[in-house]
Picture 1 (tube, rainbow, N blue to C red):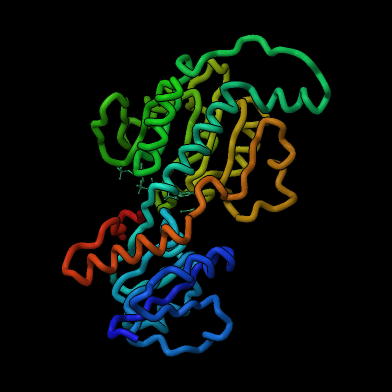
Picture 2 (picture 1 turned 180 degrees about the vertical axis):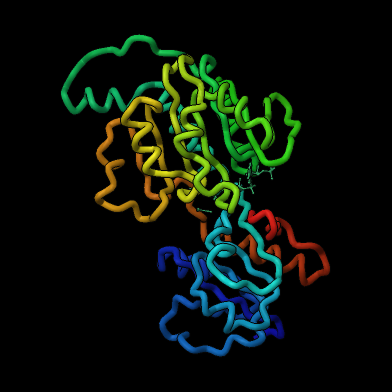
Length: 320
Ligand code: NDP
Ligand code: OXD
């Protein structure tokens, strides 16, 4: 084996996807796969790199020589909130394929609600042939995206291609071509102009519980869709599901599409499952392609070992 540091992997993805991707990865160094039952109590001293998704907490106390932690996904709350971490860089997964998949999901959900597919699904179950009146066009509807990072900006561009009017909200002010943006202080104005709210925020102390009754009540009413729609693929910890259920029941919201939940998997007793105006997907909006993840880690390690800076380092104070 080369004199290069091994890489330890603790990825709670499907075993098949990890095993398949490993077969062509990290040819120049040893891989310690914590998902392999044979690995068990392997000594992790001298291991400088970890690639993790929902890792076992003991990993960080056992691997004392770590220099970089690579997240198996774009989000890092699964690492930052759950562990006492060493003071070393945490790197996000930023990837073309993940970004494309997320935008596909967001555009699909916006079109689904625009074209009243939940209502047509009910009619189909009842074998009812009836065209619903009052079908607005995308250009009549404003989609407000909370989170204008890698994913929010790509989704915005693709929604605009479909004709939607798109606005965005982020922590810090932005100046983006052909997209009206609001910073933290402009939240009220942003919500008042939004017909379809898309959540693409990371989970941090500031964003926990942000999608609550108070926020839903501030969304625009009387726009082309009549009542607002809520779509969330960021993190479930940002939504207050009790408030969401009430808002969907009492008509504050016309409908929702949810990929993420306060607790996952969503319990079979959640009333959200049975609501005709709610679309549920099982945290599947943009799964990581494990092969692409390993290529990204290899590239980053190559940068570091040739004296260049790592890309996509998390701001630990901001939490994303
Ligand atoms: P980025 O870090 O690129 O962007 C995060 C955005 O959120 C930034 O625009 C940032 O503002 C904004 N933001 C963060 N905190 C606040 C705040 N307190 N108030 C206002 N805006 C805030 O992340 P990505 O776009 O790559 O990913 C976003 C999230 O999507 C991930 O963290 C993850 O939780 C989720 N995700 C979900 C997946 C799924 O399958 N459901 C798949 C992949 C990701 P600013 O620009 O000012 O920094
Ligand atoms: C991610 C996710 O953060 O899949 O990448 O949730």
